[in-house]
Length: 323
Image 1 (cartoon, rainbow, N blue to C red):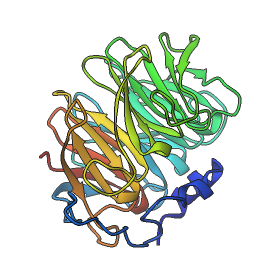
Image 2: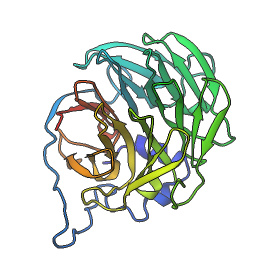
Image 3: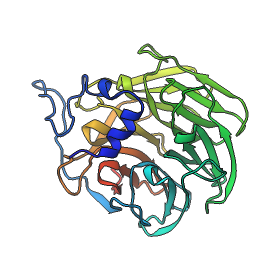
Image 4: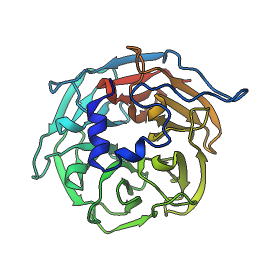
């Protein structure tokens, strides 16, 4: 059975009906047939290095693990949404610490969905239930917060570039927000639509070494690339389950060599592309298997090349072998 927390997240945003239109893999229904001769990689075992987590509220357990980030030392930070906290682990999965808790005060969290690190190792969190961004030290000490702006917004993912610019996806307003100074005024781009530079339910965001921003434009089943100032550069994707296509792309990450990794949530796979959007490979798995995906969401790539994925429907972290 598909995770109730995933349904809750989407239903709360008023888009449940949208998700069931044009999606080929829902609630265990089969993937649509593949045209003859088309390029398709059938689900296989993931080839993962390790995994940890289970459903619950104890240390090391999750209830809606949406976002994930990895620091320079290989430590892993997880936005444990419905437990209203951030959990920190060693690369091996050993629990280190956690912080948050429901409420409106400094350091409290209400359905955190995104987590990212700045070059100094500080932790930025999209506190979606309060429409704000909070900043913490790597050990969880509260530093600052600021309002996400725009009435009715729902902040999902977050990324920080080498110059400390903060980028946030505002899911329900169909825009990307950029904060040059934490807490300062935001610039933003995007309007709802399917043209170049338009967005429909943007989710994951990631910045590469050039300072360009990749956005998982989930409602349009594509990745769009922008400059750090919001100028449209290129896009790739399309609806489906062939190589390079998507069914609700969620998380996006880049590595040190410029490769782009995309969580293709409703196809239960992660796809890898080069910096221009050319398909390279994938990790795929039928959600029914115990060692495979069930609606994966967030993704981060460590300096070692290991790929960390929040396997949200299974309430765990999967660490994938580089390839």
